[in-house]
Image 1 (spheres, helix red, strand yellow):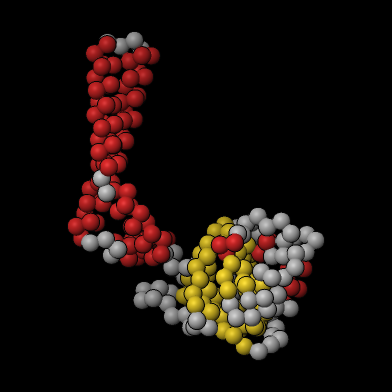
Image 2: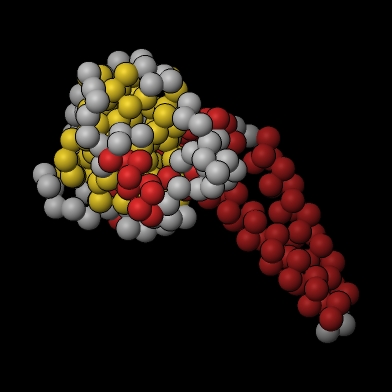
Length: 250
């Protein structure tokens, strides 16, 4: 039993899962050839209907149970997938058996028991501000109330410091361009120096460490776009392609 979370990108509106141990083809496999490979259980292809990035979460031999507040629909039918080498690859299907993969990397691989698998695909139905607010609320729990208040306070100070610095540079440039009074240039230089000192002071603070902790928690809090639920079985089984715009339970 295991879970894997992978950020997958695609330029052909198709992401999926396949056996990384399959031999490379002479050229990239797309269109009807990709559909034929999917039907044989060589790749589980998911038609996303749009290019871009997708967070894939793979559950191996364990059920997927959405967290409270999350809404997922099961799309398409249960399909067969053969992972005979024991090394699976998730990502854009343009790299399936591609002799020159461009959109996947070693970090998109994970180990499984060599076997056939029954695969169900679940689609996240939460979108927009609702999902963003939920993720930020979850990430805020990674910091104590005191740390969260300090994080917001330091962030506001940092933004203010940058604004002052930009305005100071603009004032200096204006004084030079328009040959304004020397006092204006001196004033701008003093303000810029004060802003720089403020930025250095903030940099020395714990803002960076707080931001990293918050950002890691925020990344983990966003629900995956697509969940693949794999259960080991005997084969061979019929595979195929799932389209995310299929109605639930199709």
